[in-house]
Image (cartoon, rainbow, N blue to C red):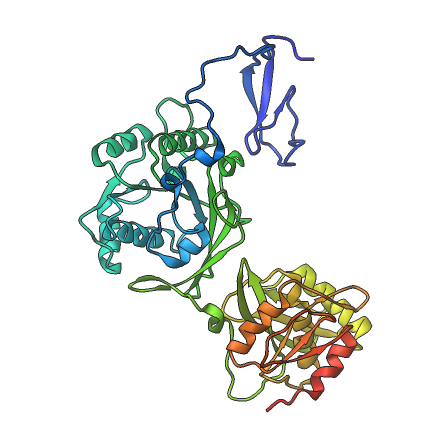
Length: 456
């Protein structure tokens, strides 16, 4: 038991309080995040009843019209948000530098102002107002109801909000802001937590939608304390390969909608535009069938997307053959290769194996296992698969092909794009017309069945 007046310690990542300093947080397992907080206050034994701010009402009498989501004007972002921005919502948009976060939010601010939803206040702490103005001019996002402010002080931001009275506030980025009431450098754990808490209080008090830009770490997670994600209502990750024009907004947390939706965008020189039908971006149409390629259908949120998996198998000149993976889960690919060699008779022990997806797409769901196995088998035998064939299924360690969710919805998307044959697990459920489904129970049967699908 800790005595009154003794020091307490708190994890900067997850906020766990411990009685003594330890090198590793017992809750989130982070190293070096335990900080001293000074004197520990004694726990409150009893809480006196206070006057409620408003009387409790039956849930049927609560007005919901004031809490309806308002569309931002960017349809792909609205899809991820669950229809738009709810009054008082706080959204954290995180992504790597240069991925296009500022460009996207300038588009959101422009659409918000152009549709008469009120003024949009864009506060930047990383660039000058002139730099933001030049980018807005280049992308065609200039409107009379858009306001810019180059500030890094929280109290100044609140002053701008009082003057402009915006309908939307964008802060770029939360790591560059600081509060004069809190010690510490901007971007530090204490400052980021205090600034975020202040902006959340502002949003809830005035019903003002607030969008915060956040940085990410080398591991791809949101930089700063873990409690930052708990303070906000919505957490979005903005992803994309800087060598590709494709960008994705992926929902991680959403109190007002589905937390697994994605929005697809294409980043161009003149701005960023939504891609409502992105399946074609992940397919590489060949004039003739090419060995080492297989097509599958993955589901991101409620959206089925066709994805092409490519593989290359060659003789290795190394003592330990190379295994390179891009866009897929490397651990699952290694498992699929082992099962393919043991259960499918494809000997890869002395071969270099390269696997990748087309278009910079990242796929981690198990439904891609069968397509990856068939692509490697096709590359090994140098025999092309039918370009009108899709393969859907999870591969188990015993070589069985397991069922996945939404097979009918996946095949409906394949039919829409002209595919005529599909390899699916046993008992797939109702299937759409226009496609011939071949049920395969194990990996060896799948490798054998593709030979009977016409290549031309």
